[in-house]
Image (tube, rainbow, N blue to C red; front, side, top):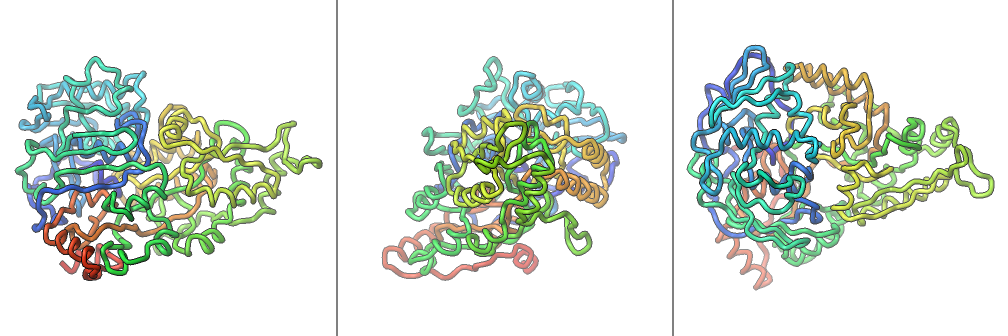
Length: 584
């Protein structure tokens, strides 16, 4: 569904009145789904550390996104190849000539898992719940605030009026997830973390053990079950998400067969640790996958709301103190490129990236710190300003990353900065981030399908608790460009604006950018049926949930090979989506 496929740009090229899906839409088979796929079996998948909540609206994380995507349907999907709109809960959405009025028609057959109809009252309840000032759904508020109060035309029809023309308005509505009013009404929504008994999606929660696993069962009474476009998808009868506090624990769980797939491999795991009989005999399949999934970002965000990181000279100095290239060469097998953009895939031969690469330059860092008023104490060697030493806390959340932090810590010590590392578990870390209670941290984001910088980089989001603007970033010129691109329906022109925004953000250095790969790593026990491309065109390991299946013949071959110490046929080391799909 749409939420699981948030991985590319919205290809809207005009601003004309329209009814979605378009006139040429028809219910047809998913081109990625295999005709050989069968329903049944169990799939066990790592889903990172155990979260503080599975409620996507109050806890926007990869874990809650994965779970909610299976529990609840959005109004629309996107086609897996063309990204054209496809109906889900809504049968159609009408957009007026002036691009301000949106009329949503919920499907007349749409029902909740308890048989109750999904209605406009559910839509209104969810809308008002998110916008309630007491709600912790900060990440989601900005997109709904662009509309007036929903007008309920009848039980299946809603009309909304936008405040201004904005290409992302249609996206916000198409991806809107409705919740059942008759379950949540009267409850404190901020406390609804783990119990979701009434759903609209293809799966429901069957069992959960706190801190350990979440088990989900495929529904046989899903109201869209007989539609062609869903045949061959969501094939597992049981999906079991397993939770582990560290990557090392995830890796051990995969090697022992406690989970079926592993998409969290570091360069060390991939290049050195993923060896032995299971790999030599191809009991474990191992692929580098190149598809059209956009490249995300990762780095060390700095809290610009307070000293010392409210000073741009300090932030630039911090970037010059990380020896990324040496780390990549000596510890990461040279697999990574050095990041200098929040939108790496918007650049190429026709649009070269001119953003500055911050190289490891301690002397440049010292000069910047001196200009910012930081002077070394002759007795301690620690930098001081106004009598205060330069000491800060790095909020960690991934113990396996600490080997890189220690290198950074030592480099900073050489110029008179003391960095203290404080490790917290995932739930505590997300709580601190929601409250902007940090100085510097490690964070990573995937690239969304509908790429708008508004939620993360607009100034008005800097002071909204639980927003994605964790940096406290405020820039009037960036705000102006964000507003400009929201009015632009031509994708080429919008990309040009995004590149300009990207350049301005890099000049402000809100984050010490680190490294990234331009492919995806996946390992799995070689007993599953998969599409020939393994992943779909725009997605990551979520493709496994949607397109893989338990193949009895492959499973029998796998078990026989393991029992007899025999090998299985080798699989491709590298999967290039365009090469395979174009051939087919």
